[in-house]
Length: 437
Image (tube, rainbow, N blue to C red):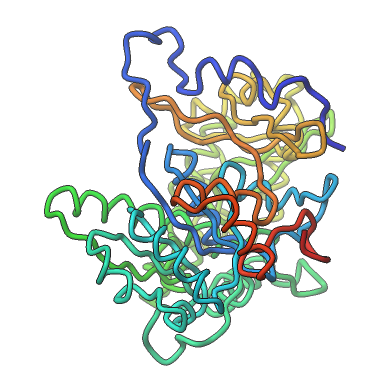
């Protein structure tokens, strides 16, 4: 259940979300993207993640939800009628829900888009064109618009119409193959990665595209269209792609800087940790030996090359594990590891991290209104700005909850709003499925 708190978020965070409270009063405390108007046609994860970051940087985001609703609302768990999955990606965005099959609904959306700075959508290519809201349509009446389309394989080309979800994009772009090669026979069943990297990374690249296009518009006055591909994103964020594409024999060395083969160890008290480098990798093997003060291993013929270290890895790992078990104090271990230019990280759960001193100090977790009388913990923004203040977390809206507010801002009177609701142009409901209000 959500935490029952008298406030939606900690008073300390409301006072100062910038991380520079000691300078408050001396700074211009505007959010970086304050007053930027974003029309959000997105659903589930990649698109909502993009527009959530824009919102957390200060943009005014109005989410347009179709009558069927955002599938993300079905993500468990729920508190009351609100999905925590949906909350994480959409808190702070206003929400209108309408049926674009009605000309009245299209007129409302057109008015919104006329005044928008940014539009983000992640439907299959061509979907919004059927309703008259493709980039070319919008640019005719709003030539300064920055229009971002997020899709699996881009808006053109032989794969443009293929459905795309994170696991399928992972499979198509090499990540699943990398994972299978990495674990080899260690797993009895082939599995997909636990996280939706393709969605999350692509959403962030959508944010980068928006910021770049804004800079271009500031210089030239021109809006533009941006096509963001999940598949291209996954290739670009794969730090081993360049090495893999050479297809060279690396003599048993791990690819790139060996982060993918970083081992996990256990302390005497049962805590687990990782050292961020593989002892197979020649430069890191030297550091491991220095870390353990075992210069004799540098002369051991079993470990003379990467191929030999890989062949004799069990023996080498036994040496490292035995050395780690001599430490009871984590700080002492960290100090000796750091001397060799290596780093350790304790294996924690998300809950453990949220409860840590670091998370409290940074403000890494914020309390968000759960719409059921309490609040829930959610990830906070990852940025601290020296001359800007970020907005408070905001709350997740029910489907169509902002219909009246947004339409009133557009000059539509209450009687007309009610008529549109009765007609079925406007939709609203407080559950992921079920009857409309």
